Amino acid sequence: MKINVGRSVLELVQGDITQQDTEAIVNAANRSLLGGGGVDGAIHRAAGPQLLAECRTLGGCDTGDAVLTQGYNLKARYVIHTVGPVYRGPSAATERLLKSAYQRSLEVALAKGIRSVAFPSISTGAYGYPLEKAAVVALSTVMDFVRAHPQIERVRFVLFSEKAFNAFEAALKKLAENP
Ligand code: AR6
Image 1 (spheres, rainbow, N blue to C red):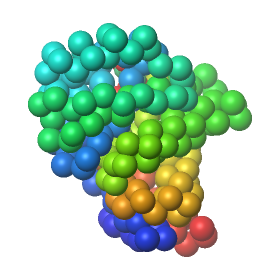
Image 2 (image 1 turned 45 degrees about the horizontal axis):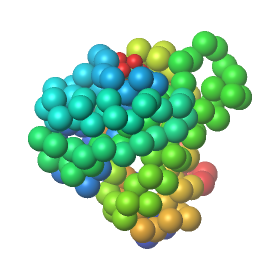
Image 3 (image 1 turned 180 degrees about the horizontal axis):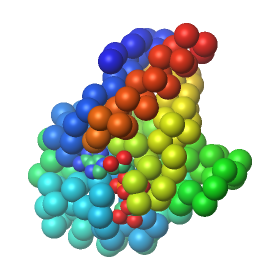
Image 4 (image 1 turned 60 degrees about the vertical axis):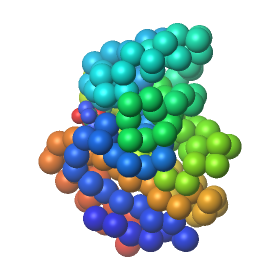
């Protein structure tokens, strides 16, 4: 699924984020930035050991913040590492942190002049954020950001499972009808 948002393009695909050819891909990391399972493990395996070496120099990342590294063996030139919140039940603070993870990732991209970014569904694996709720936060945050910053020409959500893809597709259809 692909829609125009202002002068930018927003895409949803089912697939593996490590294979994307956007200028940057986003990693759903933890505060240590020293690797983990899920999408974090897949990105470190695909990028090679130099990624961990650079991450070691960064001194971690707060929840809701984002930092940039090179992409090494990935097709993407850069990796933006962000840390989503752990979900422990509905809370405005948790929702704000998820929103912040998307927003800070795009601010980091903008500051580097990056025009295309691929996101995974942050916090919806090990961190337990319910997919349907996370999809609305993810999509509305990105849509607001690109409307205000058309320098970001393309944002692609890369959903690993059919279930995740369907949740994002349903949320995007609703948001596109009632922006
Ligand atoms: N491409 C795209 N999406 C993927 C891929 C992939 N290759 N692999 C998994 N996903 P998770 P979190 C999806 O657990 O919830 C790590 O250990 C997955 O299906 O990777 O933010 C970190 O080090 C899910 O929908 O990230 C942290 O400790 C989504 O990516 C912790 O997990 C996010 O799942 C972060 O947890």
